[in-house]
Amino acid sequence: MIVVKFGGTSVGDAEAIERAADIVKGRLARQPAVVVSALGGATNSLLAIGEQSAKGHLIGALRGVETLRDRHFEQCEKLLGTSSEASDVAGEMSATFDELASLAEALSILGHATPRSFDAIAAFGEQLSSHLVAAFFKVRGIPAEHIDARDVFITDNNFMSAEPQTDAIADNARDVVQPLIQDGKVPVMAGFIGRTTGGITTTLGRGGSDYSASLLGAALHADAIEIWTDVDGMLTADPRVVKGSKLIEQIRFDEASELATFGAKVLHPNTIAPAVRLGIPVFIYNSRNPDGKGTRITFDAPRRAVSAIAGKGGITLVKVGAAKMLFARGFLRRVFEIFEKNGVSVDVVATSEVSVSVTVDDPSGLESLVVDLSSLGDVSVERDRAIVAVVGAAISEDSGAMGRAISALDGIKVHMMSLSATGINLTIIVEGDQLNPALDRLHNAFFGKAKK
Ligand code: ADP
Ligand code: ASP
Ligand code: MG
Image (cartoon, rainbow, N blue to C red; front, side, top):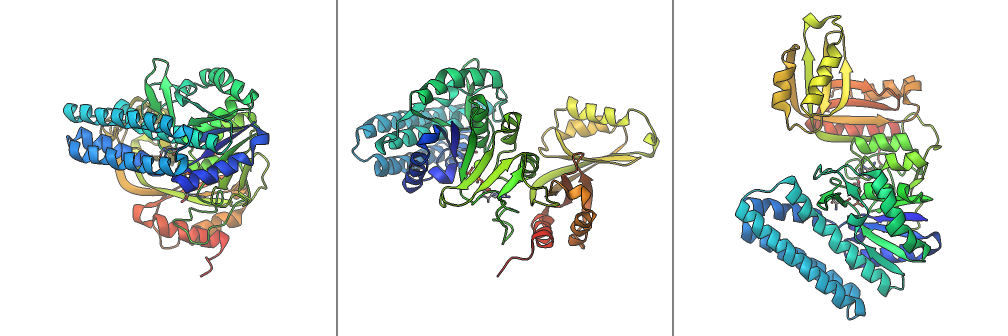
């Protein structure tokens, strides 16, 4: 069997859902299980409704609910028309939007929303899209069966970024999904959402539908996991930032994972781990160009010095230094214990004899961290930094590549640099506003200038 995941733009409107149906129809012999995102942009709208409600702006929130309701009903009408599926789905959608409006009212009375409430609200997007897609697939003659993803994806209660419980997911996939596939059905379910063992709705974090797809693929020992999106595959850089970025036809799991972690949004950073464990190939395809080659992610792609470049902004750099720690034993241990105690996770680290520099993705909780670190030495915090990652399986063996990366950044202030222990990722910290110029220059250096 295979897992076929469609992202937001690939189910964004009736035309996109029709293309998705054609893609699935062409794969019926491979026993697909389908995972879908919310209609493109719906999650942002839902979270905005949550925020407005919590601020007491109920009218704005309810207008947001109505806009989303209209959008879904318009696409539903186009897709299902007067078919027998239409009234079931319309009834289901109507009840869902009523529930959303009640939740908005409740939050506006409370004047406050917790991560748990945001998950309850965000989850509506995938619930709606998965019902609509499953119903349309049936109309198109696909033997689709909707499954409530929350019956499969059990997580912890770390709302808005819940940790999946892989054993429970494997059991549920065997009990709930596998029998349908064996029966010749095509299960269709929401990505992104799950529930705790206590039954509370959770989400896997933004972009988490990719992760749902790979968790399901691993649980069912799939032959392949296909991620259908709005670009031709994994490219040498984000095409929205760098003109002339090129398709990578094959890339290794570890390279793809580094790229996703350091900003290549085409894959959620956690997508690779479940696939790697079982060696399941992950493919990325463009739903608007279904005959394209796409990208194949496996263990055995060619080893290149540089495969691609990624980057992300909004990074905070924390530096701890003091002459008194010169040669002090246990200093690094103490630094990282303080990060752990404060629940601040660390991305990139560089050390010297007298200082340690660390990047932090999420600056919440930094105040108490700084107070604790001050007991070890001088602490400085630099906000609005960006990380640029140059990723390639053989980068550390290619001295020319390192030199080229550094000279490409001539004139751009570099705050920190680190080569990962695996030797496949050179990360460079620059000022926030230098992110795009740095990506552009590095891309030019390794992949040539964009053709005008
Ligand atoms: P989906 O809704 O299908 O999950 P996303 O918006 O999450 O789609 O991811 C696709 C987007 O990822 C692309 O439109 C592109 O702008 C961005 N992206 C960033 N880096 C890369 C890269 N290296 N290769 C391809 N796309 C990338
Ligand atoms: N709909 C969710 C989001 O926008 C999950 C996803 O699309 O992967 O973050
Ligand atoms: Mg995505």
